[in-house]
Image (cartoon, rainbow, N blue to C red; front, top):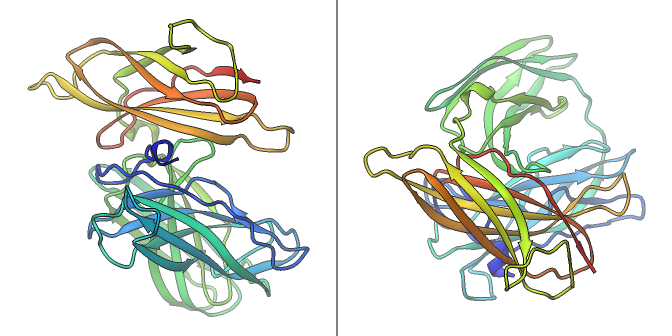
Length: 358
């Protein structure tokens, strides 16, 4: 399991492996809260603390929930007992019916031995609804060395205290993963007031957009999906092609047996070196395998993520091979990605490949 989960990405070029525990907590027959993405994102911040980020969903269509408690366990690479355990809550104090909220939990200490993290839901409570009395919208956004962003918060029919605006950054995985959450504290906001706010900070280079939302002691806002301009996303210099599944003898396969070891193989073509002086481009190649849902209303589930670290010398073609052992039957599709060591995509996603496991 650790080998499988060791592929998840973090900020600031620090490789992490991670385990997870995706649990659903039911405090009453009509209430249900769960993690939207079974695989949280883990990174080490600039102060050396380990941070685990994800999304919690309130699946009830009538009742708000509050006091959502999440436990985060932090492990090293070898031991089964956690090095540190801590609890946190969701970013939103109150999650509305059919609503979602990111969470962000930081390790108690900046322990450099931490290489893995898991999360589990401990509980929650039904809550009175907050009114949708806040509106947030963006004005200007520029991505240079930092993300420079301006926006406006509009308050409705009551004074507010403890008002915060949040930017929850996500990547281009499907479904997207939360990468980090930033907070802009506005404090007290008077009745029928517009408040300007600004954000200027270096962000995770994997981010392709962010959710903009706000909450106060009495009100909350809708989530606004803000895309980072495509023109600001780095130019792709690698092409992924010829994704196939092969046995140990190099024979291509279209259907597999549960428990059989196979190779996920593909070719990548690099057009020019990222570092012109050394003529080298360090990269990480990722394979993500998802299981097709049993119904149209369900989402695909991530079965496996594997990675291969390599280095292009000059230009030309290279071949990547990652082992996979299917653990359950079903129809699966394979996604491939190539990122540089700054966790920036340097290739468009590779072609989809379907595989049947019996």
